[in-house]
Amino acid sequence: MYCMMQGRKWFEIVRFQNCKGTENLPWKIDTFKKHDYSRHNRTLDIVVKVEKETKNLWSQFDLYKCNLNGLPDTCEYYMKDFKVMNICDSIGRKGQLWSNFVDGIQPRMRCPIKPGVYQSHFSIDDEAFKFVPLPTGLWKLKSYFYQDKERLGCVNVDIRILNNPKI
Image 1 (cartoon, rainbow, N blue to C red):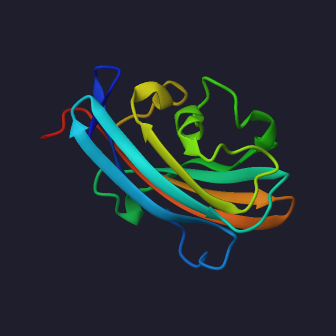
Image 2 (cartoon, one colour):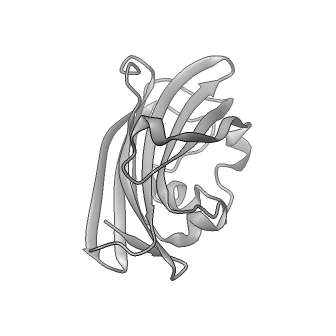
């Protein structure tokens, strides 16, 4: 699944899954599915299970840039231990990196976040990349979610950025 970024580059979400060893944490990705309806209609379905009421949600993530093959010895830190605090204060804001994802969640995700199954069906486009202009490569994001000091979940997301993909 490739989508055009600002008419110059293309991106593909390669992986969106729970981190290894996090099966017993209270926030889990249950399902991730990519739909490739057409070149201009790319959507994702993500189902997240929340098993614990969450009030003081925050995240810490690492972002790596790798060569297109993604081999570990080609990766370097782009951002390390970057923290996004007080997610509950900004979860519903428009025009943010996460807005498309959050707007597609049913039932609506509001803080405190209640235990339940949350489904998001949303379109992807280049809007997310206006926040971070990424050069060609395989980008690996590892994001941990916390409430106060308790780790709630962890997700790995890999995105391939290409100049001219062979589709």
